[in-house]
Amino acid sequence: MTTTEPTPVGGRTEQTTELPLVPHWIGGVPVGGAGPRRGDVFDPALGVVTKQVAFADQADVDAAIAAAKAAYPAWRDLSLARRQSIVFRFRELLEARKGELAEIITSEHGKVLSDALGEISRGQEVVEFATGLAHHLKGEFSEQVSTGVDVYSLRQPLGVVGIISPFNFPSMVPMWFFPVAIAAGNTVILKPSEKDPSAANWLAALWQEAGLPDGVFTVLHGDKVAVDGLLSHADVRAISFVGSTPIAQYIYETAARHGKRVQALGGAKNHMLVLPDADLDLVADSAVNAGFGSAGERCMAISVVVAVEPVADALIAKVRQRMAGLKVGDGRRGCDMGPLVTRQHRDKVASYIDIATEDGAEVVVDGRGIEVDGEPDGFWLGPTLIDRVPTSSRVYTEEIFGPVLSVVRVASYEDGVALINTGAFGNGTAIFTNDGGAARRFQHEVEVGMIGINVPIPVPVATFSFGGWRQSLFGDTKAHGAEGVKFYTQLKAVTARWLDPSHGGVDLGFPQT
Image (cartoon, rainbow, N blue to C red; front, side):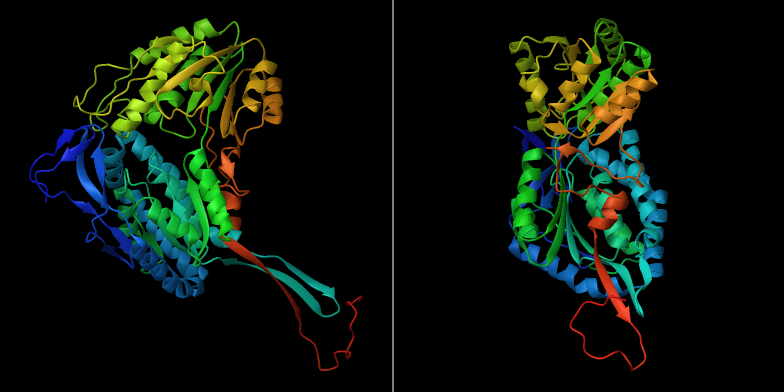
């Protein structure tokens, strides 16, 4: 439909022709486009709008929920064997065609193709976990708890559940949730980020190809209207969310007020504690990988290196050396790091470099104005390294969500742990050391939900659960693994007696034998 390139104008575009539209996916078909509410979707490496996405109005919200509700009884009642076979077929199709999905992610998010493929692979782990969900849905049975009485439990689905996912992982984060929810017998409404919405529609079409009945997986695009519609509608039983802490808190409070189960994963400020005995080459590699991968737009990115002196100077020299070799540019050109997702976000992240200088920190490497392998209008910011960051600075206290790595120097292990434990966030952390006793002490004492020992990004495999502490998680249930199964199911306890007619007559007391 687009015959000419749109022209960038201050972060938006003047279009010389109609752009392709990303519609909703409701009842197994693309829906939307008639209404005036739409959002621009950029190619961040080009800096231009390449398509638009439909923004839901209340009628769209109601239609999406109605379709999911209508599909629920038949999907709930389908045999576990049949549900599992559809999930397995989805897994096979995803494995065969994930290259297509990676290209979509790179074109709208900007991360390099290899990173997009890595994101999909981590999501596939949860799909594979869900192919065996029948094992995790088993209840318990106690025979003869009283004379002729057995008690057993059943795990059953909730109904319609909503997933509100962020821009930074348009495939992986939804796949943390929907494979488990669907395999357990729920119907799902996914509200993806409006910044990179096309991956969700691709996944919906793949589910349909795998044999998923229409209405079991729905995609609803938009802004606050779509979000609030899911949070407040009586037919939506649960909400899963990943995003910034202020929005996570809003999601949690609003959905809970409307009687829903909520798991709302918020922001992070992940620390890497480096002890003097650590292998500094391993640390430097890990800091660069975990700090600048996906342009730092990861909730599990390492954003603060806590160096126990006297290692800081030597470590910074090694990190700086590795940073000099990074190639920044279009993710489709074999670069190491791509652009940030929008011009507005790029500018916000870059502003922290000035804040660091104002607060007395030392900017070791400034990522502004670098040469890139890409179009000049792309949303570029190169890897940035800042030393001696005061813990009172916004550079330290706020989630930057970009390629900015801070170094804080401390005098001891105890000082480093105290720094981590007093922060607002508790998502992920890591320690680098060759001392097994120090590592074991760290995993016991640190107050963070996910911990790496010589592992910089400690995202657990799908059989375990993902989530942090403090302002990194609102609600008491984490994503995927056993916690995900519990979140998407409700428990019934059945007390049964099968006796002959001589049941003993009326007795108002509790059974005692």
